[in-house]
Image (cartoon, rainbow, N blue to C red; front, side, top):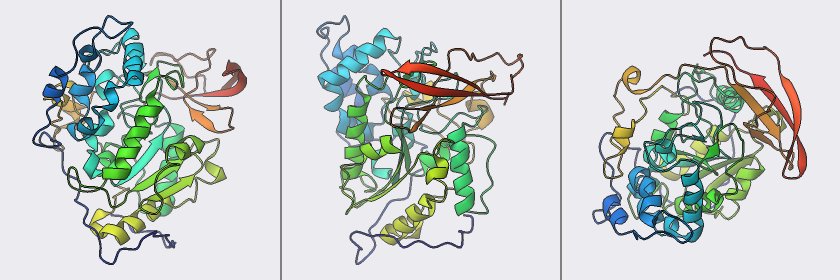
Amino acid sequence: MSKRASATFKLPLASPPTKRARLSPPAAITAPLSSSSSFSPSTFLSSLPTAPVAGSQQSTQDLLRLEASSLDPSWLELLQDEVKKPYFLSLKQALWKEGVKGVDDSRGKVFPPAKDIYAWSRYTPLHKVKVVIIGQDPYHDDGQAHGLCFSVQPGIKIPPSLRNIYKELKTEYPDFDVPTHGSLISLARSGVLLLNTSLTVRAHQAGSHSKLGWEDFTDKVVELVAKYGGSGEVGKESEGVVFLAWGAWAAKRVANVDKKKHFVLESPHPSPLSARRGFFGNGHFLKANEWLSEKYGDDAKINWTKLDIEAAPTAAEVLHEGQPTVSASASTSASVPIVETVKVAQSVEINKEGENVEGAVVKEVKAVKAKGKAPGKAKEATTEKGGKQSTLMAVWGKKA
């Protein structure tokens, strides 16, 4: 790991342990992961009602086939009652109408692709979570979102917020070699849960799925992390994890987290509109490792500077009784489709709270195919959203 910056931090350990707790190191995802010997995603799916849900032509079994196929069993076992609740079935009906039905759906109308909606769960099983980073909703332009907040696939232009995250990492770890890609898969595999609050978004419409009910679902995910995250053993209660909440939206998600048990760090969002108001210089990555080291020992630290491009799971790898069989040694060139890049408008929005939201689209600014020429300048427009005017600025990207 790179040398640490010279700055030191005094950390508020709410309950300093007399001896260090044990935190299992993150497992390489090379074989199917199971949550318990008795739970099976296929058994869960077959137990669901096959009669149509009220007001729908689809059954509960139809609607939850995606969850049974792609949610990691360590999460699905504890979320199985949540996904059967009326609000979640209504959410799934809404997604069904937009073409999201199973893992093979990839019509480009909803992002991320269906197979990647729960990618966060497969890369970071519940009992392996050490740090949680909470985003808002997925990137909404072609080829960007792949189920991990702030992360984009190799070959896609690095979004502005992620560039600022890299800048802060460079400040805290001066030896950090800033990558030319935006993939954070290596962090997810090392125990960093990269969770968006809303797990889907309509193509080119920022925040379009924020009212479907995802917030209730991801609040439940946060609740489970607070109870079981970082335990190192399936079913064992957590002894504490780190929550990094950047921006007011993320702060709401951790409002009920026990701050005596867990280490909660808050700051402004890393977007260009707010990064200089307190994200830069927050020291969160160093502070997280200080706390993990004090609590569990040096082996628990996150290697924030190791951001190698790692092979992403294909649909075939994801579908194995709902369990991933991802090989960390797989050939990146063979497994990761490098998107034939289009020039995509990266954009930011000032919402009604005055906080930025990545991904707002200015209707007047269209993405151009790779052969086109980038205008090379920003455009501004205003649009009505939620009854209030929002100022939008689209910044044109370049071919990757």
